[in-house]
Image (tube, rainbow, N blue to C red; front, side, top):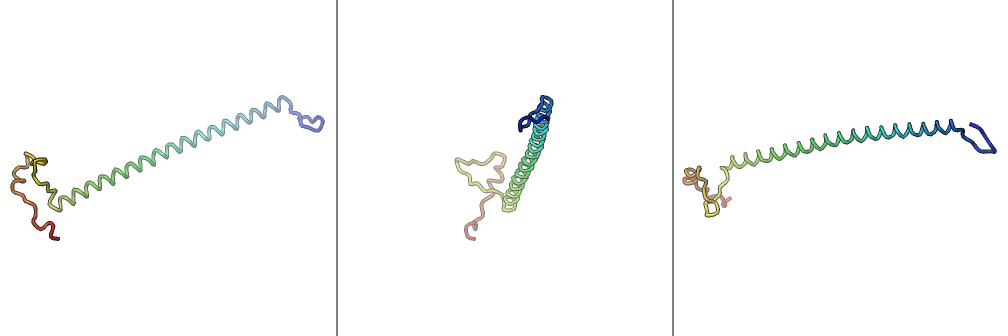
Length: 106
């Protein structure tokens, strides 16, 4: 580096070094940001998969619980009407079963 009239004067070789160092720093920074983006994207996909699996398990457990509750309370009674005719395969059961008479007395 040469000094001329109170200010710094850079030679062509020194200017080239600074440009090279700046380009190298920019390349390293870009690579670091790319790595961090890829890592965070992978972690986010894993978190989303975990949340989706957790929600699916919760829904499945809810369905199992509702089915268990229905089974322990004698099933679901639907009165036979024109809009809800009996299922052909269950004619024998629907013809003999009647709802409990004390349902509303509790």
